[in-house]
Length: 309
Length: 309
Image 1 (cartoon, rainbow over the protein chains, first blue to last red):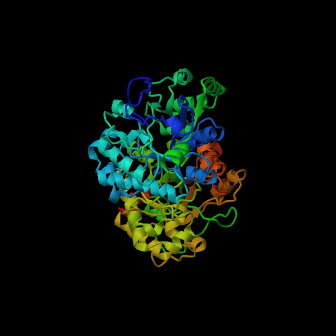
Image 2 (image 1 turned 180 degrees about the horizontal axis):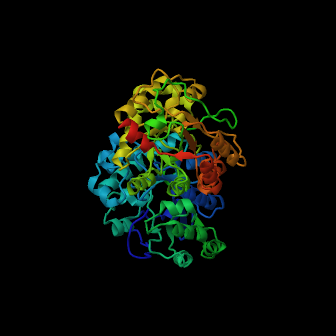
Image 3 (image 1 turned 90 degrees about the horizontal axis):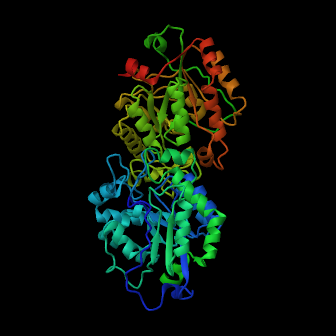
């Protein structure tokens, strides 16, 4: 998920959706006042720098979950990892944009079926505005379905759905397709009423049903969050995290030649920015702050098994 | 071009094709006994490690030419380079295989139009044998045409055609498509009668016409050529190079994390193997050996301008 927004904003927004009397913590088998957290690594499959850093975090228990971009060049690396590690909590990072300057990807369903989603060079658009202006809804559904099917065909058992750069949260019509697919494939999906309203201007409260597991709070460091203050940013979230189901979206990669080249002429979300996420979540300070605040790391698979299927 | 073959073989094969009395050197404006050489970097666009190493060689005059893989993740990096450097001698490295384990690519024309070229995961096959067994000729033509058109659409003015892993040299029917496209787009293409016969078992002598510029000799280091002996291998070629039109196919990349990850579990043509090509062709020893043997570096564009168009 990515979006230009206020500097260093903290998306700590209480969900407005009317919920059943039992809290989501209780439904999941935790105490009523538990502080649950999904530490979620985005953008898996997008590069080897991202994959190798994120796999390190998954294998060391530093993050609890991640999601994979099916149209991207390193998708097969993550698919092979998922097959070898069936316990890893991996979902589909639904993708309808290709934001880097020289490192591009295109649709899985094929150009003929997704022409409205592609630019003159047959790649996904760089940005959400272009997608919003051009996209045909039927083609979005075709493409997202193709991405989920390709992941399943490659041996991945996805635990959830979410979206790269929030592409499916961009309009209410996009969101309806996202929810339709989540219900059809019986997968939980990232949902937050207040955050979607604030960032995308979309009110999804009337779309939510009992089938959906809604995240109470979503947090993400947005550029120009400084690399130097990253640890303070996340530590502050841990120290003040509310009761309920929380999710932190992070983007871990190594600050190496590949990642630097990918992010060339792209001031936001670059190599050093991603290394800072890796550095914090792999640190002892992170583990200590989680423990000091009695935060329970959980997975999307728990939500899938207990609330969806 | 790539093919498992005899260790460290030297493809120094005199062309068997009957040629006009005037030598190709004379047709190109050189002395009858000139030793012409195209130093050609393969696999541009396949990775940033390959692009950055090859661009270094092109910019320092260490190689004279290269060719770009259109279906690959870093195609746009090379397309942008071509647009900014119209004098660079860049052709299309026609691609019908995706040989690495976790770093994959697929057709440009789209899955629906190229199903016979793709495996169960919708990527190109890993190897030529699978391609040869499954490929529909019409779909090969569709795909190769799509690759050339996409390159031109991106602003590249290709100077020539050749082929990744020699995919279009694999059968005579494939070669007919290659020649048909070269003639149609008025581009010279890599051709060598004896080499194709030896490596692929295909006799193309009856396919060659006056429209074609045939390379007298093609050289390439094949695995398991050792990294340590690479300089001696190329220096020996320079010291014994015949008169006529010669071409050395090389594969330069940096031995970095990206390239190592690309080549994982793939014993041949890996990161160190490609670094060895970079190290030799960027060396003073290479320049001295070329000069000592009075070898003229030429480009495919010279051939295109003087013999084809």
